[in-house]
Image 1 (cartoon, one colour):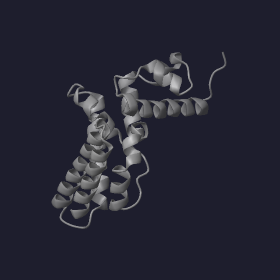
Image 2 (cartoon, one colour):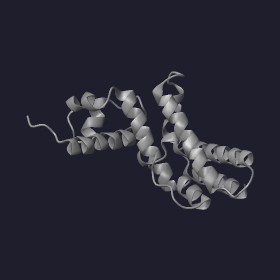
Image 3 (cartoon, helix red, strand yellow):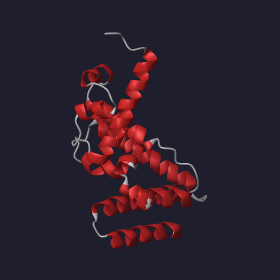
Image 4 (cartoon, helix red, strand yellow):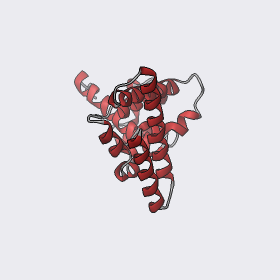
Length: 181
């Protein structure tokens, strides 16, 4: 069997990470197997351990990949996109913090996945803080963390409900609250 070039191996690895990022957000960390991820990436199961130490190592990279989505714009744009019906309806392409919080909460306190998740929360809070109006560092940090909590909490609740009217009210209320801050 011919060897894969380093460039092709790099592309294959990125395909695996992107497939895992989507599947983990759709089905949870424990709802997806290595075979599922490799199939979604269009690769054979056998190549997985040549690229990743284990599924947890992949989960950390997949989380980072999902979190690194391009989030340009201002505060209003971020809130509008995050609390949109499109985001509610597409967990596989959405925020990994909201999609994976419950799974990560069940991980061991010293797990690599939990560490990556915590770093991701810090990064997202920092991004939000940078979009807020000037103020003291402490006040901006508090507002950023409260905003992050409102965004993630509203998204998780909206995805869990079966009443579209209530979902709309919840998203509207969260957007209104964040506009007032």
